[in-house]
Length: 337
Image (cartoon, rainbow, N blue to C red):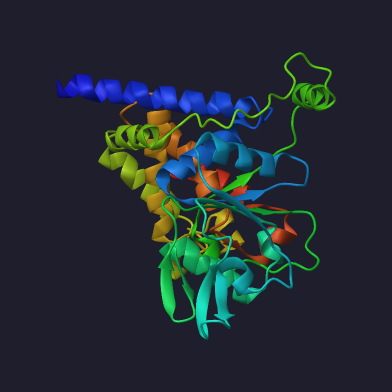
């Protein structure tokens, strides 16, 4: 009976995943990896940093997902003159009662789109960090819990750095994934143009307002994820990948042991990356209808989990290497069980 219940739960979870993919595809052309990444992070209870040039449907994808899951949605445009009160809220003096009342900010939503997050100054970043890390904010002397679920999707533009503020490492580490949003293929862009111009028979459908997934569906997917097993050898493999980003000082000094990639990393990933890698590998396995994790699950998620957690050295920039290049090198070096 228990096996039948587990099988039914796994089947329900797969059906929910396909429903989300089809619902997103009805509004967002292509970007399958982006869609899966957003849903994976949501199931894991993490946050996502989206990086891509303007016009690649990042905001559309986030808004579409919020409507599919019946989540309250708020969009915050980050600017250099933004204040923490604009994000979390403030105390307002009520003259009639001679007292202060709380006016909550836009962060009090299930899904918060932090648009161009790297344009906000340090005080705003610290306020958002509390919200992301603790699921709460402090207004005046009182701490208020944020809605459950609470999911931050932040965007940043990789090609324009003037007037921006580098995100602190503590905040970057709170993002489960950093997802790159690529340009569409020629076929996808042709379809986008036809749909937006009203030339296609499958023109952009009007939103029905009815969510496609509910709290029970999310619970079913999370239950299926909890049933996914991780072999100890694969858990050790994930930990070894993360540990390889932070080599010991003795290894750095030993020219015989020093691999090429070591000189490109100033600081490696924390144990939070190991936790994220194993957790999201289980989700990927559940999405594919498996109750066990494979090495491919870990390898597929290594870049999204690690790329924003590595602090690269000057040599990496001089040699034109990105964090993805370093992670690819690690995947080729660390033995697969």
